[in-house]
Image (cartoon, rainbow, N blue to C red; front, side, top):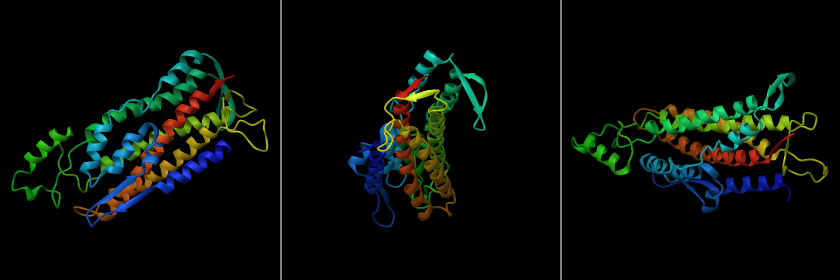
Length: 289
């Protein structure tokens, strides 16, 4: 089976195994099959956390436990390439045309610097995303007989989450996370796009070790990982726009906007995790010529 067919089969299996289960009127839960979890790559802990969350508190608690996982964005491969080949010449291209000479260091910086910013953003988002959600039926803590703030503070300490006012209808932290996921996959998509062009036979600035084969043209080494990175970036960009719709949250609680979040966010986490895994694999394949 060709690499392209295998990737297609895995994607189909992933879509089949990911499903939404509704239980009762007040609860919507994403569940991921154990086989799917094995495919979630670097962002798997976050994706599983999002999948387990019922209402808001459970998912945020799980995200907090997994937020410190190492290796979500590993820049060591790019750093090594820069160290070994940063000074080597490379022809720049603007608007798909030959431009002026540059260096591999400049090209690699255009890949690594956005990812460095995303690493910092992942650390900073903890302050706004990983916070307590306790509001009661209408989000004002009015049902706790005057003890709502005290209970919330104790619960935040118990769960090791930040303290926050209720945010039933203020969904900007969730949408902010989705936007960051789209930025990560988008930056990796740019890397993939550059690699597909640099690996063209007529450019030959690099070659890919172990590229995808062709049943009809044995001489080809198709940039499959790079192509999939582009597709995943575009897919996540579309999902980010859908997730933005969840900002329109009617009054104190919206069943439709809430459901839309959990239709959209878990696939975004999965997509970003797959992008990170494929990005690492692609960097391992690159051989500068």
